[in-house]
Length: 245
Image (cartoon, rainbow, N blue to C red; front, top):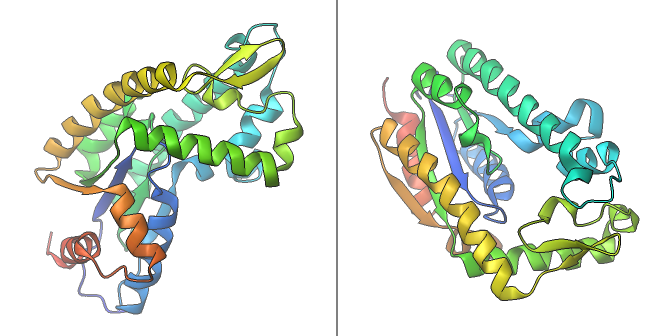
């Protein structure tokens, strides 16, 4: 690998659920490597679940699910675990990124930015360059419903009594011991509210990085599916990695 790119550079790929961050991260790494740039890629959902729960966020919900007779209480232990692990991860990443000899590209879970003060401390320590993969509430809704339908067909977790609990209060609600889909109107309202909370902190982080770069998530996904990822997002990230610190 060439050593002309910036060491200690940290890039964050913001985006709400179904933005395709994990896929984009994988393709970014493959293409950058071909162009002579090695990176450390971090999917935070995978990172917090890989040691105990096999690298999949849904396994956390399944293993820590407690049937309390209430849709939200059932998953409180899982949500607390995710929150605590994300806070600890941010502290670890601040050190890892600062000491690394190669740059990082991080795809964070949608609520990583609200972990305080760990997120603010992380930003102050590594001064990340942030990108924002935008989605409309309707695109998020369609993505969540499509994901749910795929899980129903292919995922072992769909057989669990907790199936759909990770979307409770967003696109699902707890009825007669199951997590059923909400009407689209209510789901869209919930999605908009959740996106609003995250966007506030994401936009602040983008300003902290002294650079604002936004791209439409679905357009990036289409380019990947079409086998053409040498797009403006790729060019911009490659340029950032090539800058001297």
